[in-house]
Amino acid sequence: MIDTDTDTAVELQLLLRHPKSTDGYGINRLIERCKPLDTNSTYCNLLQCSHFADTCVVAENEDDGSLLGFISAYRKPAEPNTLFVWQVAIDKRARGEGLARTLLNTLLDADACVGVTHLETTITADNAASWGLFESLNRSQGTGKGERHILFDQQRHFNGDSNSEILFRIELG
Image 1 (tube, one colour):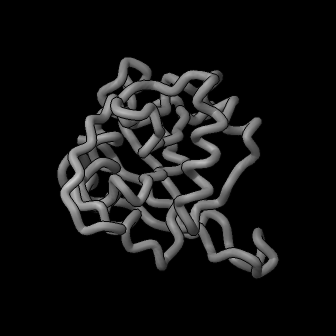
Image 2 (tube, one colour):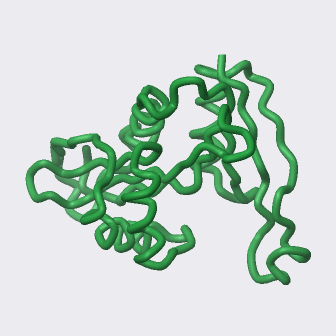
Image 3 (cartoon, one colour):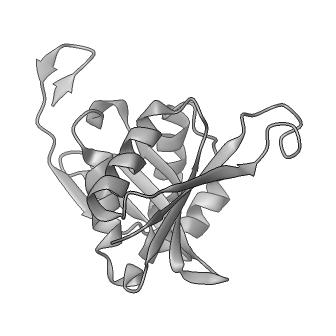
């Protein structure tokens, strides 16, 4: 891995695991560093790390305990065969190495995702990194026929303050 601040090689030893409640504050800080992700309250992240821990995953730097990656997700109550991925946050020190994809695969392999046949997420039209991640997943683990439609409209849902959120639904193969 290349440290972009010093252009020197840095090898990170990562532990991939489900979050615990004590990770909530660190996850909140990680998300703050991952612009343009929307930050949630620390309390929301605490709930993700406790109530939804089985469908979330973190990447912890084994050297210093810092959190370098986080995926929050949940099974939709009305469609328990669908996993909704809420956020993917990767610290700049760990970007470009496939960590987001590794975390996503780890999550899909988790016991809590047994029986999941579909994955959904929302992405703004200009988020090339997220489109690349989920289109790659669709090609490798999906049927390749991802469905897209606007779930939350820029004007109707955000009063023009945020870009439209496009739902991307992947049928897993």
